[in-house]
Image 1 (cartoon, rainbow over the protein chains, first blue to last red):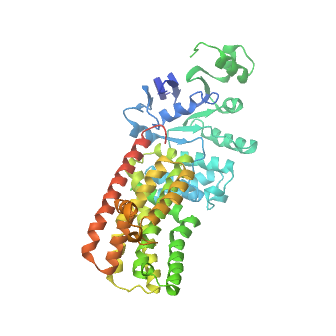
Image 2: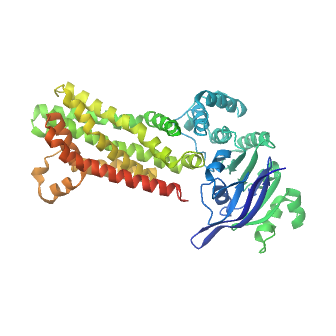
Image 3: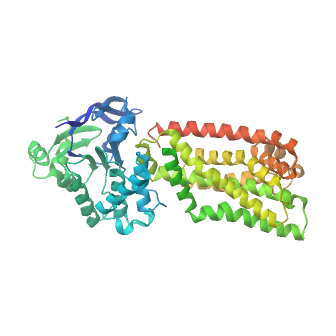
Length: 245
Length: 245
C-alpha cells in the first residue's frame, strides 16, 4: 500500500511557543486516520501545515510524494479540507456552493453541475439544493461543508472537527457519510470526541502539547497503556511526560 | 478563469444582500430627492442639481468600501477564505475576484444617481457619461479601502470603520454638504490633501464640461487609489501567506 502522508520532523513555532513539535507520522492511502487531542494540542495547526495554509517552521510533509514546502501547488491540487467552521458561502444556494468549489478546482460548468448533482444525492441534500446555505441547520451546513470538500475528488481529505457543535442525530448522519468514504479516499480527521475517533478510525494519533504521543488502533492504544477504554488510554498518554511515538 | 468563478460568487453574495442594495442604491437616490426638495424651497447654490449630483455620486461610492470590506471580513471570520486558500486559487485570483464584481456595481450606482438627477433637472448630454468615467478612480479608491479594511479587521470593525467613520469623513471633507471655502483654513487644507473633495470637484468639472479642470483634481484621486490599492494587495498577499488570516 502506498504512503499518502509522510511527515518528517514537522514543526510549527509561534515565537517562543511550539505549537507542533517535530511530528513524524505516516498515513497509508485509503486509511482513515484520526488526530485526537484536547484543545490547543496542535491538531488544527498540523492540518493547516498539511493543507499548505501554514508553512512549517522546520521539517516537511510529503503528500503522495509532494512537499508542502517546495510544491504547495501540487499538494493543493490533490487535497481538500473541510475546516472547523462550516465555511460555506452564505448567500449562495447549496447547489451553487458545490458548483463553486468544483469550478475553483478546474471543472467546467457542465462537469461542475454533474458533480454537484452527485454530491447532492450522496449527502442527501437534494431537498435543500436551492436553499441558501445560511438557512440550513448546523448539521446540514456541516454535511454541505464535507460535500464541498469532496467535490474536487481529492485523494487526501482533511476533516477538521467535522461534528463539532452538532446534535447527536446529525453527528450519526455525518459519521455514516464519512464511513462511506473509507477506503476510497485517504482521510485525516481531527476530533476531541473519543467515541468519534473509535467509531471511524483505522488508526488514531494522540496529540498533546504539540507532540504526537502515540499512534495505533484503538485496541493497540488500550493495550499499550493497560486500560480498558480509549478515554482511559487517552488520559494515560496525555498525562505521562515521555514521548511514546 | 478561476478569478472569474470567484468573482461570480462575490457578485451573487453582494447583490443578494438587501442591505447592500438599500444603502448602495436606495440611500443616494433618497438623498438626491430630499436635498432637491430642500433646494426647491430654500435655494442654495451648493444643492443645485449640477453641483449636488456629483457630490452624492462620490458619497454613494463610499459604501463600496463597506460592501467589499464586510464581504472579505466575513469570508475570513467564517473560514470560507481558509477553505479557498487551500484550493489552487492564487493571490491574484482572490484580489481580482473581489474587485471585479464591485466595479460594475459602482458604475451602476453612479449611473442610477445621474439618471435620478436627470429627472431632477440635470441636463442630458455626453458630460454625464464623462462624469461616470471620471468616477472610476474614486470607485477603485473606495473598493481598495474596503479590501484593505476587510483584510485587517473583523466584519464588525469594518462596519464601524467603513460604515460610520469613512462615510462621514468622506462626506464632511468632500464639499458636498457645505462649501469648503466657507470653513476655510486648516479644514479646507486638510480636505484638499485628501482625495474626496478632489473626486467631487473633478466630477463637477466633467458635468460642467470644464475639461481643463478635471485632471488636476483627478490626479489626486488616481494617486490615492493607486497607493491604497497597492497597499491593500501587499497586505492581502502578506496575510494570505501568514497564519493569521
